[in-house]
Amino acid sequence: MNPFDCYKLFLSLKNHFTKSNYDYFKYCGKSNASLVAFNKRKDKYFFERLSRKKTEDEIKNYFVANFVECDDPQTIWIGEIIKSGDKVYENWSRKMQSLRYMFKVEVEVFIQKETFNEFFFCKKGKHSPLIQKHLQKALSLETLVILDYILGYANNYDKILDDPIWEFLSGRISKYKPFIHIDTDTYTKILKESIS
Image (cartoon, rainbow, N blue to C red; front, side):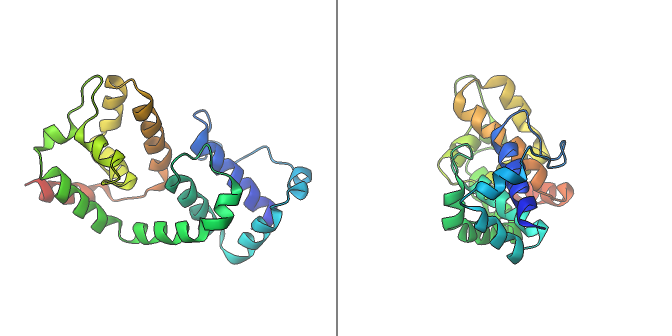
């Protein structure tokens, strides 16, 4: 991957995580970047260095990790990624390697404290314990995504909740979901074992 391709990948993933009408997969990662504009950027050395150090898949995961781990992908700027991107990527990679274990621990800890239905129960104007635990940073975004793969709760919440917090979180779940590849049967089994 050359530096300009690396830059285009950055732009397309940023669009994916920040624009509701752009889908990285639907548009095959295309972006309206020009080589002229890229060559004028003061931070182009960062894309050059990244393209030399990592494979294309690693670069994609590097950017995904940084967009997902920040509090608001809309406000992230390349200077932040240059400064702390490697550490964020390393932490995210470790999380991906232990995803099954992390999911098991999180569902055992939190779903056991209430009945399964109570944990997911959501009514107009009131977030479910599931959302509350995530907002308290006690449940990871990855666990929310996996639970949505298994249960499809987000669509139901979209119909019930009409507040900016859930709208933002729902967008994050739907944008991140295609990057989390899991065997749904395995995770369903883990969930069943945890609540039985």
